Structure formats: structure tokens, C-alpha cells
Image 1 (cartoon, rainbow, N blue to C red):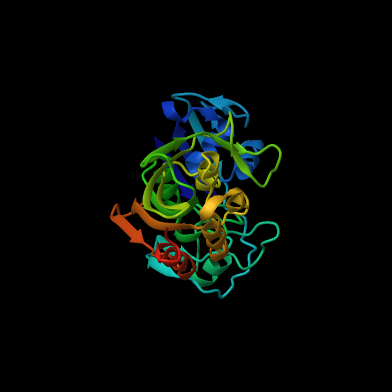
Image 2 (image 1 turned 45 degrees about the horizontal axis):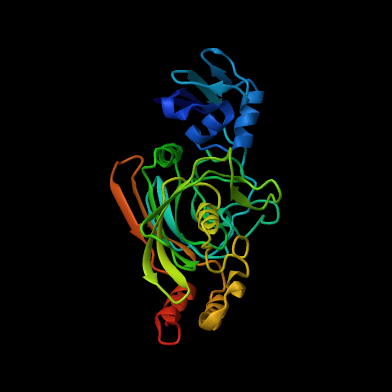
Length: 328
């Protein structure tokens, strides 16, 4: 249960912890309100969060039935330059928009990517974005990796942001990806249920590890190529790099993934070796595309269903793999 009260001085959220939501306080608030962990920790440190009426500590664990009150101050002024960049907008109303993001575009500013991001482009297109995501991530409810293309929903109003965040948390947003992975899956459909956390040896990477957050990915083979599978992949959870990590974990990394599957094709021998090497050359970035997005509008309740076909670079790979040259 959640109750929201707002005004020019910010807003107050009153949350009741459900049995499935028991967690460390800062993680719980971050997940429930769609705020970054660092922002939640600053709010707690400022004394703006209470648990059952007493001042909270960010490291404490909240349990079933606890009443958490969070005063969220107004977002800091956005200090990001609006940039006139091309955007493929497939839907827009006063509360949200759905974008078909191109490969190579970072979603929000970060060290090394202060311009040219989706947020820079959105600030040029949209008069005002939801401030719930914070100073550097206005409107952003979920993300796609830089080299992943496809559908992304963006909140324009705070009501939409909170509603979409809650729908994602409750697994009421359907996200379906098209993907190519090396080798052949032994079974289809397949569910991968393995926890994901930061790799302690390389902070750029995520990995399946004890103590990580639960992650569930559902996979189905659409087509079987010579030494790769063309897949439908559905996310039940939304961890960082989840599809890429899970497929690499079971020995079938995403084709073109330089972080989790670099050089996989070089380990092949036999008559299929040349085919695999050519596929690697044909695939100029990770073969991962967010193809479908289904959710209930967070304000109107209308069921929304969007599809985005493969972009030209990935469609060309599929045609090659299906052709006489690319098939066994």
C-alpha cells in the first residue's frame, strides 16, 4: 500500500511493507519509489525517512507491516543541455512517451557521457519531464544498454513515473526482446532463474553470484541457425545486463557482445567454423533488440501494446543467416 501527498515543497510517500518486499531500507525505498540508491541514502541521511514513526537508518531492514514515511524533496534543477537529436517516438500523451531507441545512444548522462544521450534529446523534445528520477535521470523509468536498440517508456509526469515504477516492481510490464545467441539451446522454452550481482573482480561487469538479486529470464528459440539461435527473450525481472549475463552463464552468450561473449566463435572447429566467423563479422554490435512493450497506462488504465521491428543492421544479419550462404 502507498499513499502520496505532494506540493511545492516536495512530496511525502507513506508505504506499508508487504511480505515479499522485506529488504534493507534504502533498497526497499529505491525499488518502491523509482529513486536511485544514492538519492535515497541522501534523503535518509537528511532525516527525511521514518519507520514506524522513528528516525530511520539506511542499513536497517524493514519487515512485513512496517510503515515507512518518506519525504521526497523537490528534485534539484536539471543541469543537462537540451540537444536537438533524432528521436523515433512511437507514442506520446501528456503523461508518458514510448521511444524506439537507436543502438549507440546512452540513456542518461553519466561520467564520460554528458551529451548525446536520450535524456539530452528528450529535454529538447519535452517541455517538462518527471523529476522523480533525479537530476541526471529525469523521466527514466527503466533503461536499455547503449548498444541495445528498441522500445523504452519515459515518464513525463510524476504520477506516470510512480505508476510505471510500481508496475515494473509488480512485474506487470511485459518486455520482449529479439536476440541471437551462440550455439544451440538444449531445451526451448527455457527459464533461467539465477541471482545477479556486481562482479567483484571487474566493476564493469555483472555476474551470477550468491547474494545477488533474484533475476528471471524466459527464453524461446524462434529459429535455429548453423551455429547460433535466434531467440525471443522475456524479462520477468530487470537487472543490469540481465539477458547478456544469463545467456553467457548458460554457455550461450549474445552474438556480438564484446563484454560477455568476446571471441566465442574462435573456439569453434570443424566445418561450421567459417560460418561462425562470418556471423561475428556481420554482427557489428550486440544482437539485442527490445521488440515489444506491453503495460497498462499508469493514469488512464488503458492497455498499451507496442512493437518495433528489427533495425536495419540486425535485420541484415537475419537475412544472411537465413540465406543459402548463411544456412547449413
